[in-house]
Amino acid sequence: MAPDAADLAPDYQFWLQKLSVWEQASSKETQQDTCLHLTRFQEFLKQMYEILKEMDSRAILERFPKIGQLLAKTCWNPLILAYDESQKFLIWCLCCLMNKEPRTPGESELNFWIRGLLSHVLSAFRFDVKEVALFTESLGYEPVDYCPSLLKNMVLSLVSELRESHLNGLNTQSRRMAPERMMCLSQVCVPLVPLPDFEPLVEALLTYHGHEPQEVLSPEFFDAVNEAFLSRKIILPMSSVISLWFRHLPSLEKAVLHLFEKLLSSKRNCLREMECCVKESLLPQAACHPAIFRIVDEMFRSVLLETDGAPEVLAALQVFMSCLAEALEKEHKQVHHTMKFSLKTYFPYGAPSLTAMLSQRPEAIPQRHRLQPLLHISQLLREAVEDHTHGSQRDPFESWFLLTHFGGWVDLAMEQLLREEAEPPADLLWLVVFYYSPQDGSQQRAQTMVELKALLNRLLMLLKSGPLSPADLQKAAEIPSADPRPPVCRQLVRRLLLSLLLCTPEGHAVAWEAVTHMAHTDAVTHEIVGFLDQILYRSDLLCAEASRKLAGELLQELSPGPARV
Image (tube, rainbow, N blue to C red; front, side, top):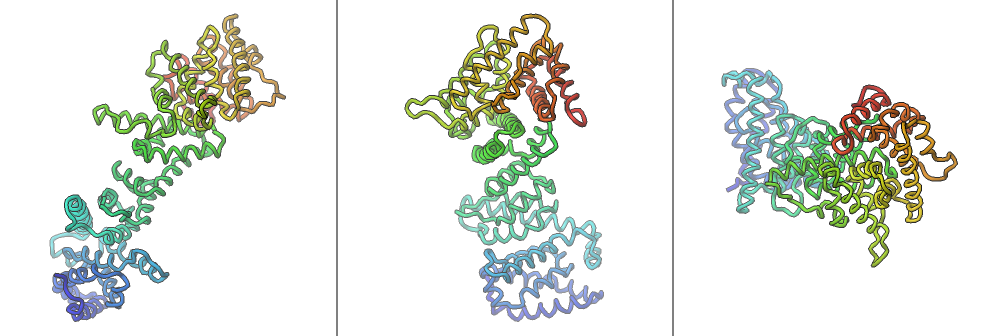
């Protein structure tokens, strides 16, 4: 049975006076007097908490107008904080004073003041406080040894209470931690999140799940944890990170934006560096769950739209997808090769047959069997984009966006075009042209396909006619300077030339001179560096060892600064 507030009134006044006396003097006699009263004062704090937890903050301040003075004086008495469970009861009393939803500036200031007291209480014993020396030495400890252990035990006690409450919540309504207490505890932890000693408590809060319809942890807590995690002030296990991003969408969005800033900075990152950044972010591992993947994917979609499909953004998306595929494969092995979620849950707007084809790993398909899946993918895409029957035509951007996730197929199509000795398949031409010019209409795309086919024929004729020369290649691929076509067509031509130089023995002989001639501006050089980097990143898919070596040498020559190979 909880004590009555009226019964506690005399003790309340007594302890307020005692604390004032102890505060004003720090003699040995005062310290001894404090130690003699520690047990009684802890019992008083416990009884006080039993009363306060049944009241809201406003009612507490009306009933005990000097409660703030009493608790503040307690916070600054190291002997009380060092004794048994006094620190824990003090923390819970302070939590009761916090307003869950402050309505006035005064209530917000009170919350801020209480957080400051809590921060002091929970971090004070990380230092050698001389006032506590008499007490700890009498127990046989030095303060520098005793105090961190005290803090660790206090955190473990709270963690145990949270876990017990969680387990009880699975079976019965009894002994579960009230949502108000959870909210207060999370608010208390906001300034303490970066402290290493509090990582177990942070993890326990993140993985605690009640049965309330609304979130029981404060948004400020989620923000603080996410900020500390992104700035590497704390290390969290994967389960805690996923719980954080599941429960607080702004934290997930901020994590994705943080990754974008690292990947798309003004300083160009090679794809291997991008891959390291992506993996370190833990976003691919979290995105194994479709709900998180679709948020990340939607943010990539927005950036692609805002940048008109910038190559850097496409590269970042494809690196992310590569890391996600690796994380999914690892997860599948752990669950006995069973896929937890269907592809439809990751790509709900894509045709299932097309998504299934694209999700295959091109490098896993033997080279002699690669043409058929490429043709099938192109046919499915073309049907989705250009088929007007029965209202089946879709927004070209949606089909293109789905294709961009799996850019390896386009690289494969480019190489396959150069391998075809007979007439280049129209479906392959369509796939490559659509990837580079998704905004074109059917007629314009058809015209580009005719021009690309003619270019291929000229290049293949040069390969058959004898030794290549850079001048002949340039002439065969020349686009008049007055050509009104957008720069993307020129990119497609340069990409085809680079593929020929790297993926054919004849091209290797003139690659250095031809690439040097092509890289006549910074923009084109940047574009060529990006393609070479992509070749090396997908080395298992495209090129033989000689081609990889050549691409690495060219990349080292063209890249500013240290070698990127």
